[in-house]
Length: 386
Image 1 (cartoon, helix red, strand yellow):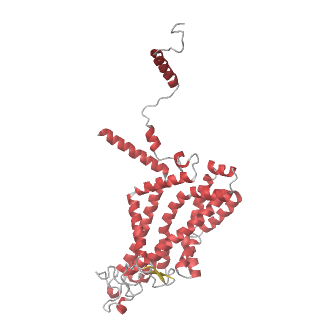
Image 2: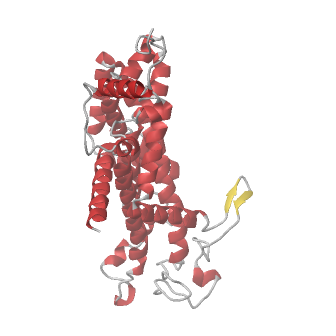
Image 3: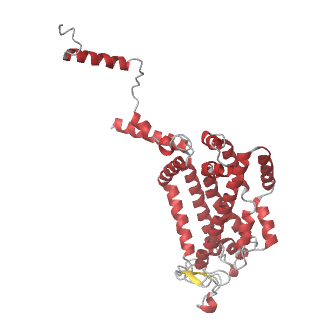
């Protein structure tokens, strides 16, 4: 038998020929795309709503996928300079208000610091300096001047943030939580349940929110918790309608259908799959509504229906000095008595609106993906030109 007849004695040339033949056979029928960069596609931000398989497995609505989206949103929010500046302003105002005067709980001092030089209720010309008179202008000793009752405006503005800022966050926390549960139930069950629950929301929307708050405060009287109740009692309706619209689409997705198919209870499906995936627009609306509540509280205070007279709350401070807006004592207008409390409201509400816009941009995955792609193309174009 010759070498050609022996199958076990192939030469090196035959091996090379067969390898090339197999390579051509394997490549036959494949589509070759030029100018396609696979690494860029793998590294891009997902354009899907709740993340890709790397973040949450095959189930785009799992907790891991949701966490992936929040992490990406947090990174995008951190790159937004205006939003980060506004966040620093809000945090600074909240901390300054908290540290303005010592805080006692049940007779125990839980916050001993005092950034405000005087107690907000101290009448300066009676207990500090007899030479102080009402509506003294700003000076080195009193940076924001003195109000009509002889109290330090600087101390009162710092302490006043405790009422306005805390009411805003407490009201939004309560209304957003209730609205999330209400809207999730209405959208998930649908049918008659959704119809009845949404008609209740329509009744709430038939009346202006500030008018309803006026009615509640006029009935219960002024005070901190009365204001919280007034703005929380009907403020949940906007969140409920927003969440209901989100849940109507989420309830039809594969991961929700799969959870129902394996026998998960409705309460567990809503809590673990439906409600968490509707949080994105809720967070945006909540961040914007904090400023709206602060303005509403200030409006009631300016009308004399907020906190008790003499309380260092920004709206109530404006109410105490509104007679001086046209003509002040001695023919002068004490502009500082209204500019500083009003300026504090303006700065806080503006900062919260900027934060809300930043959160909206950060959580908008599709828009963020488009911006990221545009940024990369511009960077590539700049590198090519160089």
